[in-house]
Length: 380
Image (cartoon, rainbow, N blue to C red; front, side, top):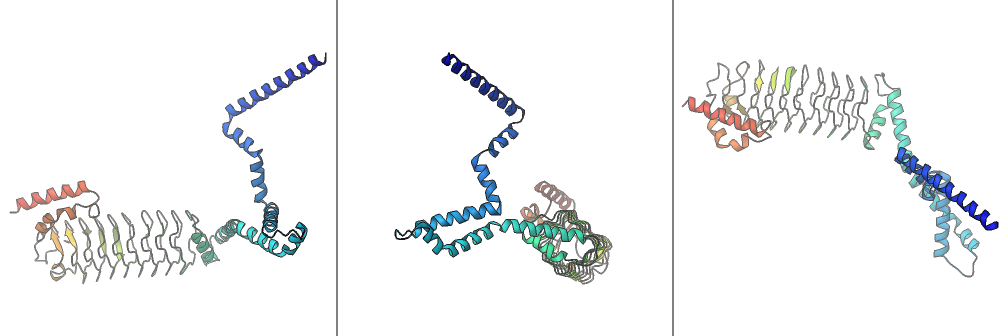
């Protein structure tokens, strides 16, 4: 009778176990991720790490660890463990405090970042600094993504945002004079009427940014990515664009007097600007259009003026073109230089003029070289 009863109990346990397994399996099929998460949360390792996330748990763990280490390193048979611990209690306490301090660095950093964002958001609409300079600098220093940050009309003079990620940021009408924006990413940023007086934007990315009415007087834009940018009604006096990528950029109603475009790529750029004393030494101006631009005292030494349109410019002289590379160049009526003077040089160095850095791609280069050969053959 007793054996039959034990057998019945075992069968009942087995059936309960099988039913539970069936339920677990159905649960797993319905939501594998939730099933694994629940299993993980019931493990000792998970509970241990959860405890370690609390200050009390971390402190207790560090204290016990240091006690064990102290007992091991300072073992003395003449003293009891409690005496050893008491003798080294100060060292154990200091060690525990130091470990907790180091472990909480990230938490303090996250707290500082939250406070910085609060400062930025609470100052929205204010025209002054409002504490945003320090807040933005701290976030940029920590590598925080500043995409979409809005600080229109803010006074942020001399702020350091080197390497900051400012994609689609709203900096409209902000004062950013003498700021440091080296290697900053300003893709699609709103920079209309922003003051960048003497700002350093070396190697910055400005593609598709809105620049109408901005002031870049004395700014450093060397090695910047400015393809197809529209510099409309922009102040560019003494701005440095050396080695910049300005393919397809347009400079309409802008003042670029004394600006430096040396060694820049200006493939099919469009100018309708004041370019008094501007420098284009060794720049690549293939297909560029200087529509009604004023080129008085502009320096064009070594500039590649292949298919460049200069016919409607003013202030241009033969002396300015004496060291330029002319080929299929459209020149003003007052210029006596041969517009095809250097076409043979281009053919001799066609590999240079067909490079991706000069044109958009090699296919364009091959096409234009073929056109040039046909042009020269017709004029022999």
